[in-house]
Image (cartoon, rainbow, N blue to C red; front, side):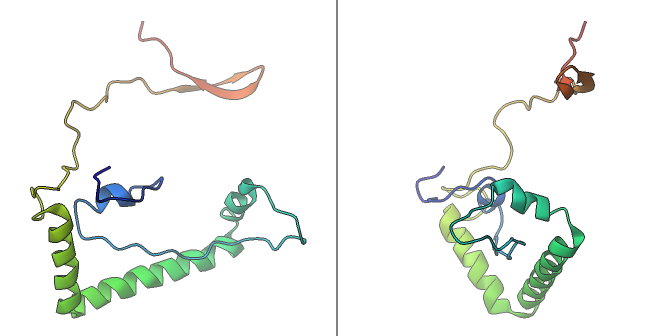
Length: 133
């Protein structure tokens, strides 16, 4: 990470914020209230994400937030200018600036790997990568 970047997460936000003015927001996820002193395992929150009644309100709220943010930026030149000023400052001059990091790899991408095949084994459903021979 560049020295000025102090946070990294498991998504593309930290990468993409170096290539374009970016904003980030968090929206509540569904969660179960547990009995006092009890904590549900992490998979419970992920499972709730697959239930329309628990995830749809979050998606609706996120969509409204994104739409209203875009509308504000379309209508508010000062906000657009502030976002661009921050981008130029953080990248040392914008695209190609002294702190800017190009979005493409500086090596050939490994695109010739074989796709895995899914098989049923004694362990259950699994995948393996067949040899090219």
